[in-house]
Length: 336
Ligand SMILES: Nc1ncnc2c1ncn2[C@@H]1O[C@H](COP(=O)(O)OP(=O)(O)OP(=O)(O)O)[C@@H](O)[C@H]1O
Ligand SMILES: [Mg+2]
Image 1 (cartoon, rainbow, N blue to C red):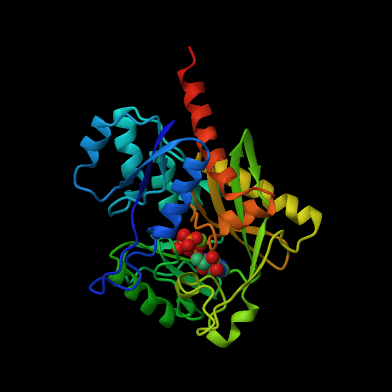
Image 2: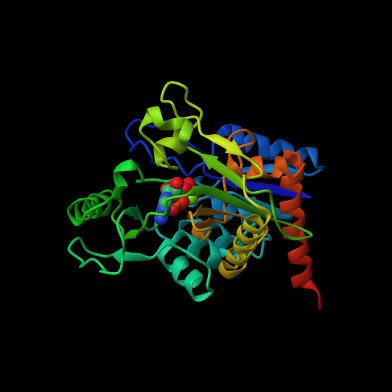
């Protein structure tokens, strides 16, 4: 197959805010995916989606499949941009479609769907202006997050607040920094878990990954904040969380968490791959924080490959499973 890999490249640019490129992919990730595609017997075209002639590139080069990890350009529907172009040109691509990608970027809207499906997610309120009245049923501590970001952008320990004064100040700060609605939700104490779903013949949940931050106390960070993600592994900052894969859970809880991740994948309409982030409360409720239809695929650092390795897969197997799942779906669509 001729496969095109679509991506946004992480760059070094001191004029941009520190988290500007956090969602984008490193050269290491792009090179690992392209080597895997080649090692699986395909050819690969590298397509940086920020090139000016993207549309004509796809019109003039009929590739068989696009391996899409692109985050898009900007705005609330950015992850849906490349799939929309590919749909228009009728070119098959891996992963979720425009609708699911745009939906998952909107955390509050996704949570409404989860609630309708009886999937647990923390109680929440959306702040569209700074002086919105706080819903009296919400219980402190609360966490304040930009509604349309990923990679924990805008999320630090100071986003967890325990009174209205601190809450309103944080809402204002996030609204100004990110020019968007702000999501306020109940902060769930408990285990941090993430679950990868891979459609390898059928949708399966990979071994659950538990991320334990107790080894990071010296850093002042205690959950998966932006600094924790950005500087993960840094000895200097004391940001070395401990990974347990499979997670330390009893069989019933493990089953419940996996089922919840599968239900979330289906509720949002994801294809091929996703990663759902959880907090497991002390009373055993797996609260879904969000679903990532474009999870990071760095072969050494990203959560998703760690879970696939624990299932006995090699990096090449992950990439090929995604491509064959997308090809099968396309084949099914084309059947008379
Ligand atoms: N309601 C909550 N209760 C407890 N911890 C939370 C809550 N919401 C967020 N967190 C913490 O903040 C982290 C980042 O939050 P979230 O997953 O919503 O953001 P994100 O930017 O979409 O992350 P990603 O990097 O996975 O795209 C979580 O992994 C968790 O550690
Ligand atoms: Mg997350």
